[in-house]
Image 1 (cartoon, one colour):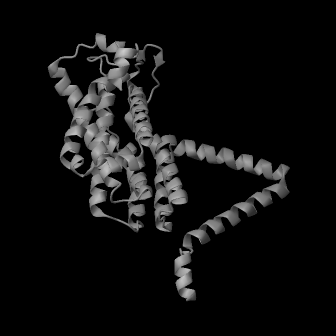
Image 2: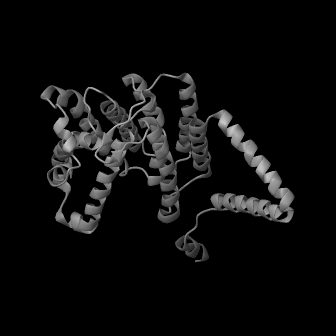
Image 3: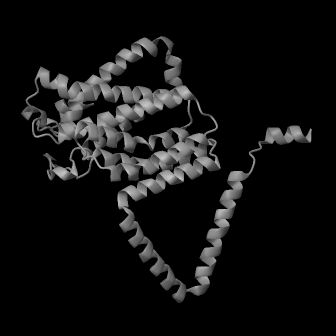
Length: 324
């Protein structure tokens, strides 16, 4: 896609100012493409063994991997306080893992590998785009490392996938679905490199044509992704009927609390709770009856959720067999 854009639009004209040599390509571009490919391979293999909900829970540990990779590559300043905050996310995911009914070790290892490779890729992209040595905008960086990822994926597919894939499989999925999936994946990759293009502490701002790059880092980007994972968990449970135990709910709630604690900090959370308490008290003075109704409805909702979660799952077939 980037090759097409470079020949049909002016979005990639910035590549003409990049002094790309074979040495720079091997040192800075190829590793990103390799880690990108490995993260895709491991991530896709995981779906053969684990459910969508549990995979998204495991992905909540990515902030810790990104943090450690950032420390190792020098893009983030080492801080035990930051590590302590993010560790709550890991604790929550570990608890959720113990509650997983369909736990498969090989799928867990594939996901672990995907998390490590993705963390390394994000930090290396951040380092590439924030470096004054390369002077590369986000879309141009994707133009360079995407072919590396495509070649590696193709080689792996030739060995492991092509011998088993037939046209019937392609027609079963649908060409339109595959095309939409490819377009969405491309848009996702473009958004990722734009979001990690600048580290806040550097005080720099890149521009590419009419694009004004926002300030963020690979760690903040990954933490924002946790919210997306929570939505995926809810959708997979509601629409795909995947198992979701109370222990998993408890563990993932801890992970979400860890995310909020990391982004806001203890002082900000205390201030927010104080403001909310005063607002709720003022509302109770002005609307005492309605406040009681809201409290009762909230308690009823909590009870219903608990009862539904603890209720045994019985299908029509099992009920018929009991009657028979």
